[in-house]
Amino acid sequence: MISVVGEVFPLAVGVALSPLPVIAVLVLLPAPAGSAGGVGFLVGRLAGVGAIAGVVSVLSELFAEATTESSTVSRVLRIVLGLGLMAWAIVKWRGRPRGDEAEIPKWMASIDGMSTWGATRLGVIISVANPKELAFGIGAGLTIGAAGLAVGPTVIAVAIYTVIACLTVALPVLAALVGGARMAEPLASAREWMVRNNAAVISVVLLVIGAILVGEGLQGP
Image (cartoon, rainbow, N blue to C red; front, side, top):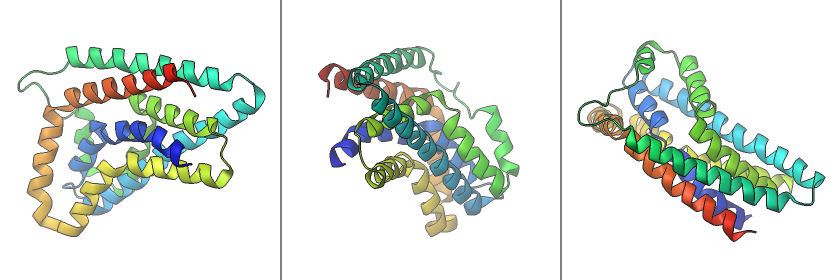
């Protein structure tokens, strides 16, 4: 199981470094829902990220039982996924905002009046409807499923992947819960930095994780 966790670790880091969920929680924490909304968002985030990896791992195991060429299929999927992410990274980098062009997406303006339940739903939606995170989650699920682990270790591997992937959302929420008003200014500064560098961060993450996946696919099992 340790080797499987090592294989999905880069994918979990890729999800963790996704700027949009971090920006969303940093916008949500100063809103009326406050820390309760932040906790709700984190719960939804954990549920969404974990569901993707869990469902794909189960389907991957079923597929592996039905074919003797599962390792070859897994390698090809990794290479295709990796190349796709690298191409996406180039597109994101070329289209990144320059100077003061970057701004919080308009849909985030609705976060101000969001309830705790609404924040939870947002956490799920932002985790399952993001194509980049779906790609990482599918990659993690395929890796865990192809390992042929028992149910217990499979659940643990998915849980570890999920926790790592959600750390960057969990840390601001914990900071707000523990630090209260003292953390308002640091969290606001972090939000502004993430907004300004959103596209650049995404590009670097996509490129690095894509290269790792291609390398793993070429190396084989």
